[in-house]
Image (tube, rainbow, N blue to C red; front, side, top):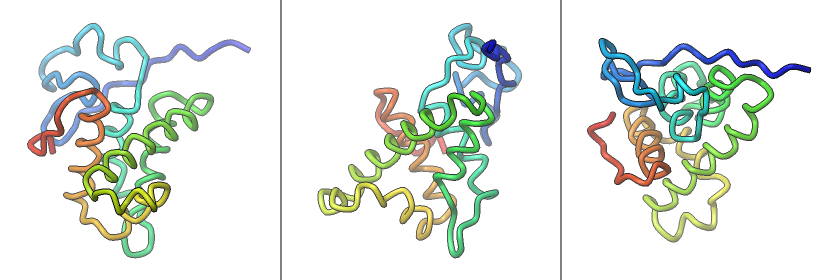
Amino acid sequence: MSQDTTISAREINHQDECVGCSAHLSDPCHPLCPFETGEFGPAVILRAANHRVRNHPAGVGYDIAGAIFAAAIDLVGNDQAQALADESRQALADYLVGQWGPQAEAIHNQVVYRHGLFAQLAEIAVSLYGAADQYDGNDPDPSDC
């Protein structure tokens, strides 16, 4: 079976920037941008998931894990999506536990689900971008949202 080598079209966020390299909509992507190389990691998946959260309602809130999985499928295809979605959810959970404090460690495997139920869309965006920044080794910057 041959490997699919199609690279996804770049995704632009609400600030008219590429979710992979932050290039402005009117500028080309950086040569090392995941949308140029086809190598996507959790940070890009988390940023791309932000566009999909609204489309994943869950009762009183949102299914953030579903949005992350949808972003992974859209960007890397079915074969790699589950592993990348799992890694991305783990990065978000680590970020949320860090934000919520030590008491959240006991519910580490539930924080993404609970956050989706009780947080507003703006808070979810801040957490997705914050987790992406943290995963990339940068300080979370709420102005990214």
